[in-house]
Length: 358
Image (cartoon, rainbow, N blue to C red; front, side, top):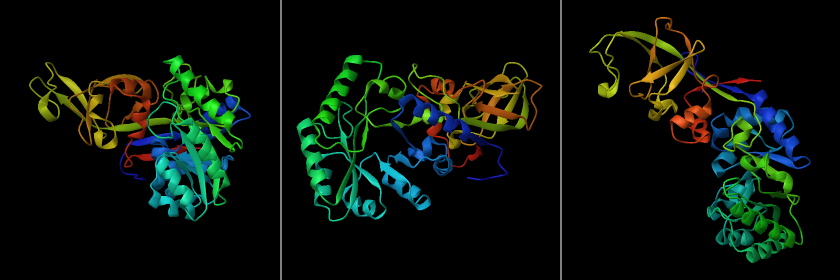
């Protein structure tokens, strides 16, 4: 969304985003990296992200939903687009028409694909312990690969799994990896795409996997991680707003809905034009923002379109506020929200303008 009137915006550094892609590429070489751009590229703006990656030679990506894949196909005719999430059998005609790659997540979809009368690009997902999507029985998976390969209308592009755990429980991780390794070893014809690792495992586990061909780079493409063993990444997203009003409150005055902040002495309050309608959630109450290289605390309840900050006499209307991306990191905001960094960036509203650094 482009809006020159509202002074709240996201700064997206596409140069740093590509540096994170290169870091993953160097880490797993000669394997290849599949950038994951689901959920509007984790809130960063999927069209701008893919346009930049394609300009740097990237020719494949992954999303979660059929709708996301179709949105990309409208703009990028030759891009290989892999749908990681579930699709329905009534979606197969559209998937075939637009030359999308789909995932076979269960026995029912496997049967539907085998009966379908038009070409399909398919990836077979193995459930190694996530209990979310994928076929569980190893023997059935091996038989399925044979059935799919024999069908002249089906291109079995890949086989993959998703790890439920990386470093927290080594025995459970080992159980998942051994199951997948055994299945791949049993395949008479191995598909060109064999992948296990997402961001949490790329930098710590992937080198030990000699039978995979690709990795899926999700949150770490955007400079973030939940694995403390991940090497330093390049930050991509910063959130800015501006001071739209300064109020001098006196004892007896109160701030915002519920009047739950009432100063006992004269205090300056800055009103910022950002709120939970922008994805800056009410849980951020009492957290901090940065103004003029100094931290200031939020007070009162966060509104849909505004919030309040306790400031001093040096702060003026029009001053730029860094909500996160410098002194205050995405991870700090996630801690205040009792969540993970994924949620902070993906919940950024479409009404916030994205400004791209290239």
